[in-house]
Image (cartoon, rainbow, N blue to C red; front, side, top):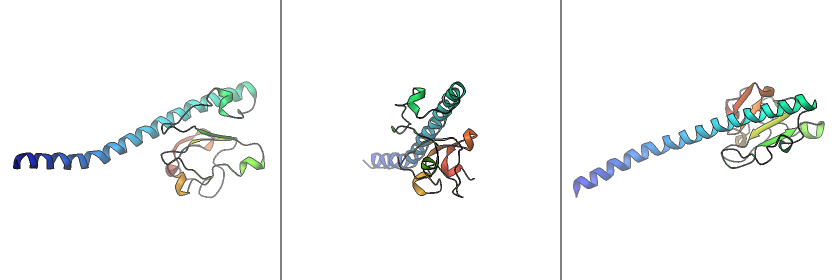
Length: 143
């Protein structure tokens, strides 16, 4: 009985160590998957732009209206068309828009987001910034 109790204790300690590491691994994998999907969406947007001399009005125009991020929510897309939409644009720490024509992002694990990337709900977002030269976690975007 004592040996069984010790064995169960060892298994419990190993599970306590392994579970957080596994959860971190799963989350990193989801972020990597979102980055890859945003890259694919960006290629489709650029192809649409080449064909139509403007970026698409929404993701439906490129056949990706129902595309879900790894957390099961639709990707967010906002085409800038004047002052009404630029106020909703994603912004860096200096409150300057991070893109010039459109925003494309996933709201990340928490499903919440605010325009400034430095806002707490936005830190886990996977964003496209600098018109495509950066795609990754908002918390890693330092500009």
